[in-house]
Length: 286
Ligand SMILES: Nc1ncnc2c1ncn2[C@@H]1O[C@H](COP(=O)(O)OP(=O)(O)OP(=O)(O)O)[C@@H](O)[C@H]1O
Image 1 (cartoon, rainbow, N blue to C red):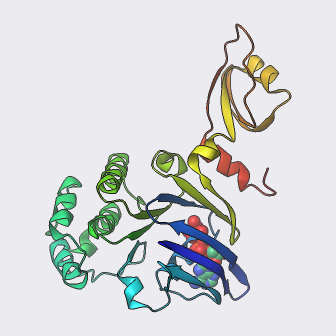
Image 2: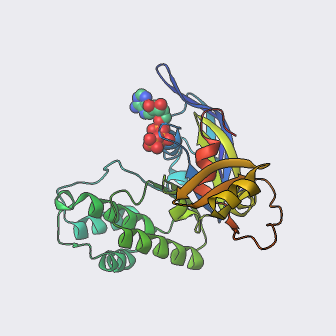
Image 3: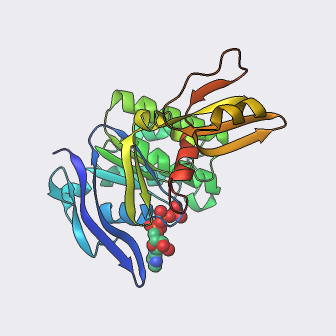
């Protein structure tokens, strides 16, 4: 099976259960959003998949091969994370060349091309780059490695809005030409909502849900209009939250949409994914 299969993975740090008997799969050829609140266990699982730390029990299979200390598996996967794995004293262009020697699947020309798009100065030493540009360097490397599985752990940390848009754009273009498995762990849910196909939501070390974005969007909807009309419409509905601006109100509703009253000033739109997750991961859930 072409997939990352996570089987009964448990990991404890002293008295903290970071992952508790977690089982699910990242299937081949999809873009995943790997979501969860602070401390949910995302980085722990990513680090286990990337062989940086080991699970207490359970196993990870990548294309049916055990991932633990397996060189054949290492060649299939790349994980971009906050950890600095690079010699910070080297210039960006020399780091590219160094990576090119280590990874057969690294596309050096593509790395320089992407660096150019971000205006990343390849003559600068890594340690002299700003925080944002250090992230840009790492995602440039990730986008230039033609491996079948790429994991991004908070890829846009420190990036300005223009650079975040550019990253999402490059990621989608890359995916169109080269369908592979992309996993994005992020807190910027609305920013990735249009990119990701499937969501894995982890909460307190357990998988809370895994579903298609389109299915999740169908779980509910939002209603916008004058506060009084919104309140009347929502009286018998399952509301997960409100936003208000003066006399106007927006309500986030779970459940199937009922027709809007005739001649009303209300309008309905698709579910806001972020609101849905906030509610799902609130104490006690829905
Ligand atoms: N090295 C460590 N030592 C002790 N506890 C740790 C260690 N790393 C993680 N933890 C704990 O394990 C749990 C899961 O942490 P993890 O970093 O995997 O969460 P996360 O979902 O990536 O969070 P965030 O979104 O805040 O980065 C947390 O309770 C965290 O405090």
